[in-house]
Length: 508
Image (cartoon, rainbow, N blue to C red; front, side, top):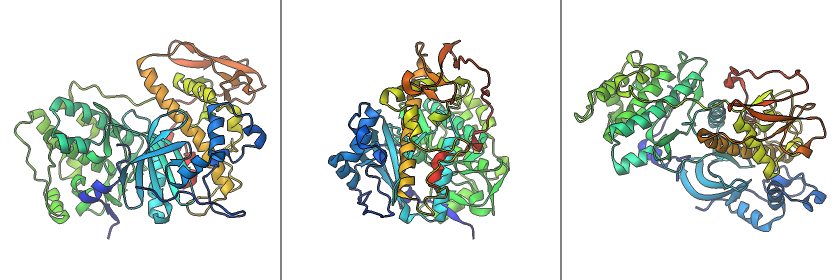
C-alpha cells in the first residue's frame, strides 16, 4: 500500500485558504519560575533592560516595550487576538490541525495571512511536510507565488506569516460567477504556468495545484499558494511514491502506478485548472471518489463546442492519460492558444535576511527596505542583540541546534529565534513593498552606509563607529558600494537558492 494523502471535495472546502478573506484557544500560558514551557508574552522584549525601556523612542522599541508591559496586549495574546508584531482578525479557513486568519503587521500596517498550526496534532510526517513548505517557499522568487514573511514559535502553536491575497480564491470566483472568457483565462493561466515553470526550474513539485490554491491579489493578478504537499526532487526525472493532492485534479498515474513523476502530475493539474477556467465545470465528475477514479483513468471527457479550436487542442494535449505523452510546460508556452501572451519573469533573487546584504552590490529594493527598517528603529545594533552564527546558517540558540518541534528548546532559545524572525519578517514585508514600488519607477538617489570593517549595512550614520562607505544610484539599475579597499568578494548571481538553508527551518 502506498501512502495516500488525498483530500476530498468536502475536505477541500474546509481546508484553510491560506491567503484569502471563533474564538481561538489561549495561545500562551503564564510560566512559573523555572518552568520549561514557552511563553510568547513579552518575547519581543525579553532582553530589554529597564534603562532602555525608559528611553524608547522608535516605533520598533515602543512595540517591543508594549509587548512586555501592556496588560491589554497580554490579554489580547491570551485570547488569540495577537501574536508577536501582529494583530489577528477574521478566520479565512480551517483544517484538521491548522487554521488561517487575517492579520495586520503593527509596524508596517501590512495585511498578512497567518497559518496557525497545532503542534500537538502534528505527527512526524506532518512536520516534514511543513519543513518542506517553508524551505520551498523561501527557494522561490516569482511574482505569482505567495511569499513567506515570518515564522513564530510558541509552546503549542506554530504561526506561518505569509503574503495576503485579498481577491479570494479562483475556485470561489468560478463557482459563484461562472467561467472566464478565453482572453481572461489566458491571463490567469499564463501567470499560473509561469509560476509552475519557475517551481520546476528549482526542482520544486507543488503536488496540490487546484483552483482552491490559486488566489487573486488584484483583479487580473493571481498568486499560487499552499505548498503544504510540495516536495523538492533531486531532478524532474526522479520517481516519487507519496501520493497526495485532491482527487478531481489527480493524474491517472496517481491511481494506478507504483510511482509517478512530479512534473507530469503538476502539468495534468494545470490542464484541469484550464478546463475549469474556460468552462466553469470539471472535466471529470462523479458522485464518489471510486467512480471519479475510474473516469480519470479512462481519460474520457467532453469539451464544449463554444471553445476555440486552439484552446481545445491545448486541453487535449495536456490531459493525456499516459504521462509520457503529455505536453511539457515549455511546449504549452509555445502553443497556438498562447501565441500573443507575455509571460511574467521571475523576480530578482533578493537576499531574504537583512544581515546578508553585505556584498559589493545591493539591489535598490534591498537598500530601500533597509532604509525603511532604520526609520522604524531596526538597525545594526538591534540585529547585534540577537546571536547568530556568522559562519553558518543557524542561529546560536543557547547551544540548542536541534529541532524545536522534536525536542522542546529552552524559553530563551525560542525568545531569541522569535525576536530575530520578527526583524526578518519586517524586512521582507518592506522588501516586497519596495519591489512593487520599483516596478513602476526607480527612486531618487538615496544613501545607505556600510561598515567597511564589519561588512554590515547601517541605515543610520551613528550606528557603527567604524569607517562608512556610501551606496549610490548608478545606471538606474544597481546600488553599488564605493569602498576604500577591494577585498570584498563579488556576489555570485548564479548561486543556487536551493542550497541556502532557511533559518526559519530551525523550528522544524
